[in-house]
Image 1 (tube, rainbow, N blue to C red):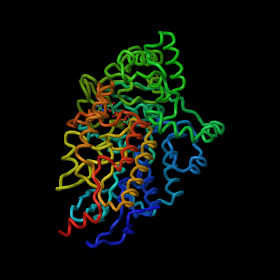
Image 2 (image 1 turned 60 degrees about the vertical axis):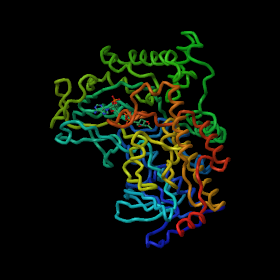
Image 3 (image 1 turned 180 degrees about the horizontal axis):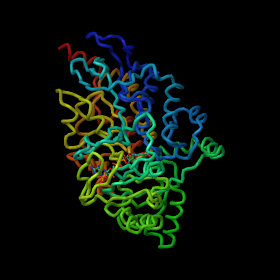
Image 4 (image 1 turned 60 degrees about the horizontal axis):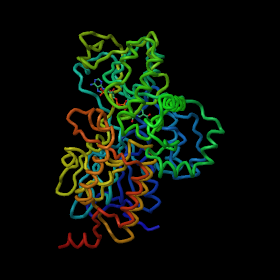
Length: 556
Ligand code: N01
């Protein structure tokens, strides 16, 4: 296999350790990237700020944490041996099992030797004379690399809201996205949970079983579909394993969201009331994210969307006994699916428990945290422990924390001040040889992440091989291609109902963050074809510079 001339981790002329590629992050993206780079004979170094591999699954260990994509599909497909030998125990694996899987992959593919844990990448500066990146890490060292790959994850920068008095709270404060590694026991405690997104919806039912009393502070109710999680039988696992070639192909090429599922062939208004209700009932009974695949226009047509939203609101009213609480739990300010739909186990039913209270903070917000209480609406709710299920600075947050400087010392944060700008979500103009895995402008969070990760990593690996084969040393997105792509991503988003919600997809959960729909909504199949087409046309829209030319420019 062709490869870039490997620097083999030796010191370069500056005396710094030199790599072909530095990868930031050892989650599912970083690990697979390393595996592929090694296959090319490239010398890569992965830096991971966590104490182990696993990325989001290393940090998100709150009670009840699970993946909302079924495990037989939320798993790598690049190795048939791996997918045939790994035994997922449940339909939706719990976080410890996903983390065990990540560790298994690290060991099975012998990845650990090139992964440096407990090390944050603080700074990456492109040197225009040598066409290399200088990468500074939290251990005080600097290395150089021809290429940098940001495998930093889309939901890995936990967001602690700026609430008055938070630091004076006397009890423990936890964030779902940054949960302690020691076990947390809420037995006998009065617990407050702020937030009602996916993380709260998964953790609230579990915390309610332990806590003396649980108070949930809700600003915006969310739509949630039951997971109907259960143990996987050997037969179910076998059915997947036998059909993996077709399941994986379908997920990559045909499913918009990278999940193998029955696709709809009609719109919601093409059916009469009874048939529609029966269809929703059937999807509800199946459970999970694919509820939104009941019809093909649910995220395009508000009238169609209303029928699905009404169905779920009715379900909430059926499940929750107290009509006032049920009413509060019924989402009414965004179309169903325009915020990521949640997948739960007994979330709504948890509000029937005598030890659980729902507090509506839509009007007042959280006024303050007192040493022993949460104050809202001029009322104090006494608590002993506080859980912030307040989400993430999504998609750009982890990239923004690194001081990345491209051509002319311009920082990526300056360039993205009005919203992220990328070509295909893979590269940003002015930042040569810097790749982003599942970056803004790619389907990423709208898809089964592992499908999107594998596609990006394969594309990047093929690209590096192509460059090496033709003697190119530097690659950069052109401004024209980037502008066109950014406009296309926006244009497609505007055709849907997504922009109608104040979601983290839009950056709306972070005060001051530009309001732009960040992921690409065209679907993973369409997007893959676009990326393949760009590659087939000699990486159209990317400027390639030959190594010799770059060196000649330096010399002159
Ligand atoms: O975060 P969120 P999340 N005062 O941003 C509220 C993925 N995920 O961690 O909506 C009061 O969805 C905020 O209220 P509002 C999944 O993709 C996956 O739950 O802004 N409340 C909201 O209710 C998911 O979509 C799994 O009005 C405040 C909540 O906090 C994504 O992660 C599991 C507040 C934040 O909800 C994020 O989910 C879990 C304040 N100051 C998560 N600030 C899987 O299964 C915020 N809120 C893979």
